[in-house]
Length: 123
Image 1 (cartoon, rainbow, N blue to C red):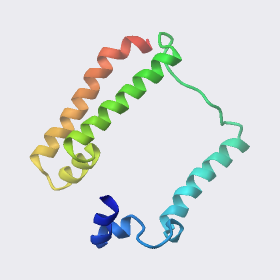
Image 2: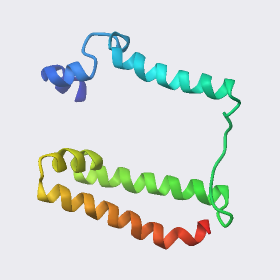
Image 3: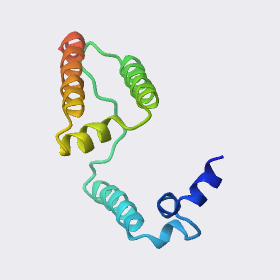
Image 4: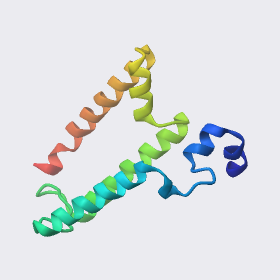
C-alpha cells in the first residue's frame, strides 16, 4: 500500500529517496559524519561508556521500564493524533494557531506534573 502511494506523490517520493540512493543526499553525509565524528572524539577523549543514569532511589531496571513506558505513551499519542506531537507544536505555533499553543502549554504542564510526581525517585 505505502510504496504505491509514495510513487504517485512526487514530494513523498523525493523524501523517500525515489529511485536515487540514500547516499545521493548531502544530509545523509552530514548525519553520518556528525554521529561518527562525535563517537571518534569521545573515544579519543576517553569519554565513551555505556551507562544508565538515575537517582539513588531508582534502579537501572526501573529507569529502563519508565523510559520504555514513556516512549510507548508518546508513540500511542502520535498515532492517535495522526502526526508528530512536536511538529504540531512547532508548525502550528509558528502560524500562531490557538489550538497548537494550547497543546504546547498542555504538554509542558503535563511534563511538569509528571516530574513533580516522580521527583521522589531521583532525590
